[in-house]
Image (cartoon, rainbow, N blue to C red; front, side, top):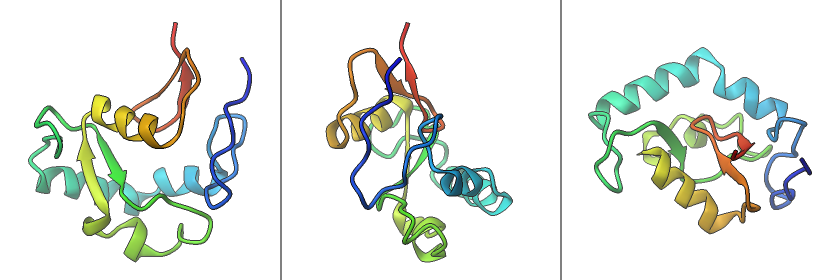
Length: 114
């Protein structure tokens, strides 16, 4: 499978799995896990766009190398949105083109669709 197109220059560089290591560390951190759980509870587990079961806590302002260490961007409830997988995929498909045969997982990774 070929590598997906690089995101805009203000976004993280892509590693073999499609995500910068700094972003990977952030999304696996305890502080993010606690923030994510608290945000889901605050939104009663429902997608903020369609009302289905929410799965992905989406950052409205895309995380970049310049803002990954800024908690006013990464952890601020005003910059978060709980989305179901379908709404999250739609969000990314509208802004970042995805090649045929690819989709985003709940973790935001790009994978091949079989």
